[in-house]
Length: 168
Image (tube, rainbow, N blue to C red; front, side):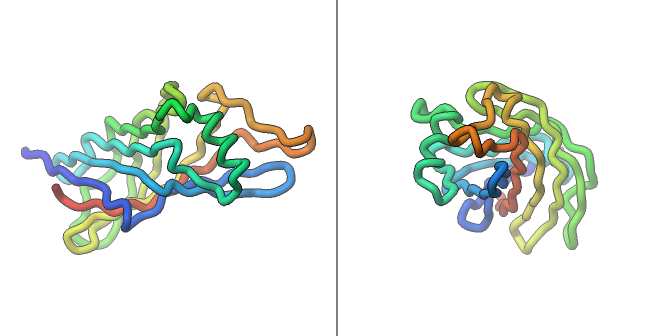
C-alpha cells in the first residue's frame, strides 16, 4: 500500500491555547507553524507539527516575553508534536470521523507522551483535522508563573487547533 503525503496549509487554519490564572483567563495563538502527515490506508502513520516559540502571541507584550523565556527562546527552540500511531477509521471521502493520535510533545527539549482526540474529514481536495488536549506545563520543567504573589497561572493549558492539509 502506498503512502499518501500531506502538508499543513497555515493560512487556512488556527493553532492556539487557553490558560487560566487566579484573576483571569487568557488565550494565545501561533502566528506561524508548519506540519506534515503521511497516511497509509487513509490513516495517519506519521504526523509532525512544529511551532516556533517566537511565533506565540497572547496580546500582552510583557506576558509574551515571559512566555518565550519560559519556553526556551531565544535559543530558537520549537514546540514539536509528533504522532507515531493512530486509533480511528480512515479519512472519509465525505463527512467526518473521530480518532486519537498517540505521540509525543516536545517543549524546551523535554518530550512527553500525549494522546490527542481529533475530528477529521475532507473538504474537496483538502483535509481538515481539529482537536484539543490538555498540557500540564510542569511535565516540561516549567513552574506556573506568578505575578506579585497574587496572580498565579494554572499549570494545565488547553491546546486547540483546526488544521487544513493538502496533498503534496
